[in-house]
Image (cartoon, rainbow, N blue to C red; front, side, top):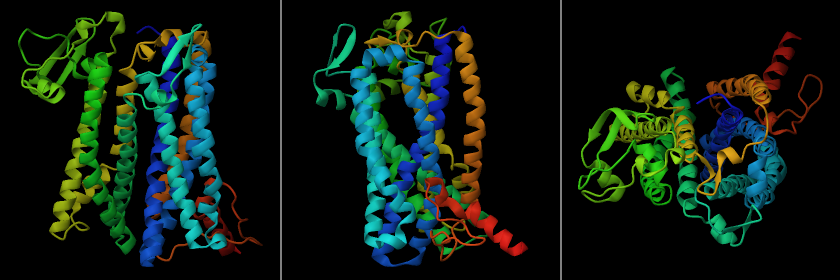
Length: 478
């Protein structure tokens, strides 16, 4: 592809959303995890759940703050870089994003402060309710965002009047054909990614001899979550694939590297290869006979459309989505293997002592987030050349900016994001590396000479690693 304004605008959006999607995925999973921990704490009165709650809420606070900051950029880009899309489809996407603010964001904002700083002020039951409401808010947020994005993938419930999209059936707009599958796929991915991160954290401490009840409980809960959600995610993915075959056949053909059908022959499953868009073939293909027909049509010799059935200008880039999809699926298979390995180790009484398992869990820590990014690359690149599938082309959606303007703004984004979110990620890893402490509390100092002021910002929820340690150091010097 030649370097032009459209390509740079796409790269810029992909770059910023790749940073952003990581943090909402973590906050979605961590919010529900925290609700479970606090519920178990209130029910059982066991100190281990309180310790884990106060430890992971610090990670949640930092991830939530970075998610909010990175999300603001996405809203501005719709107007700056994609004004054609905003003008054409704003009648649908604008209200959907507004509903997200009015429901999810207000719910989270209303109870986040109570969740982070209100335990001593409101009592345990009300505090637990605030944690649950924040968790529900993250799920509602995902619902509206996925409704908007799914409508762009499988649009319905609208008419085009005077060159603009006008919604005529909001139920059809929201509950478009791909919405249920994509929402479930993303929510389960968030839970799975969080479980892998929690499990990796526990494995890190166990491999270094830092064994404690909170660490053992972390590992057991995380591996149980992986054992359940990884196969469920594979099943959801299969249903999502069938939905894609029905509504976005060109995307499915690109994912499979499938170019054309041979008369009366079943379609093989191409495990590996290199789709060549110019030569219209998949080079070096390693195939499993008939398995493509079995998986995608659920029949022995069923066929589905190949890329040659679509005009060249309507074909997604098969080279990219072919490999991004396989990266996602490959990581998913490893997640299932990790869950089964953990189950076997638990049955043998070696869950917390098996070093091969702990190293496996540690290596899989970032796998969920990588799989999320690979999945989004698959679904968004696979939608091309449409920004609203079959309705509006991406080339018609971009703003009239020059290559120089977009190149400059992209460079600024890269520098700022690497600095800001790189520092934030290092900070998160420092908190996780510290590990849960016995009898840990989330109560900051009340203030006074040598003490911190009472924190009032989400990022201040992790005060122990910054101001808390600094205050202790200063008192030690005195």
